[in-house]
Length: 362
Image (cartoon, rainbow, N blue to C red; front, side):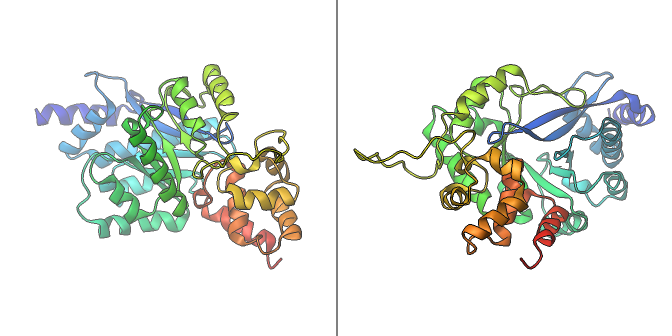
């Protein structure tokens, strides 16, 4: 059996066209825009089986790093030829055991580190986190970002989060389904959102399979990213968000609370309502919230659309004129993340430096 398995993997390595590539968009539920794409490998050969079975067999026969490197090279070649859309990232799945392997490291070096996200897979336990952090360090120095897959399931995935401090945390699909009807899942979603917001990571809900699931997640008001068949099926670069999901998101976005973590006090008789904002209220934006949102409104930035039209630096300067004590470097990064629909800590490091350099000593 091992001999046969090795022959199958060697055949794929010798015939790269048997390894096909597909891409799936990742949607911001705040802005309704695509912020990234995850790449997957598909095997166009016998036996017909899920990709993880192929990679597991490659590991068993001692060719795991070689197959992983080939998959990365094939994905990057297609993405480079197609041209990654502006202000989006490309996420690749990599086993933690191969991060430091020279063959895999060389393949990943072909990517632009500013747009690359390495997704740590949950296929096996990590026994040595010191070694894993050492493997991750050179990538972080180049500006590569990391994601932890299947948070809440598998081999101690939450320890991956606490040990690695990733830019993205991907929720296991089980935790996403049923969120509209199960209070325990709602409580968990709020809790992990609070945690990831604290570390500056963006939370990605995987397994969003129907427009109704997308609408339910949008109604929570949490600044999530989402991925699944409801948004688009994996395909050639770059799949478009389905029309049904676009309609579901638009309808649900009008119902979401401005601050889902806070209770909404009853309106007193005779009290005045805040004027309706033309567009998405600024408080709905990622990284903003009520306190910063109020300050931005005072500076004339009352909607996400206004913020995006101005840009982070111009909006920050307006804020500095109105309330200089609020206009910190961290606020600038928060605004830049809000423009994209991602957490400030998710911004590429080079972009964070460029933003801070742009304001200099202002």
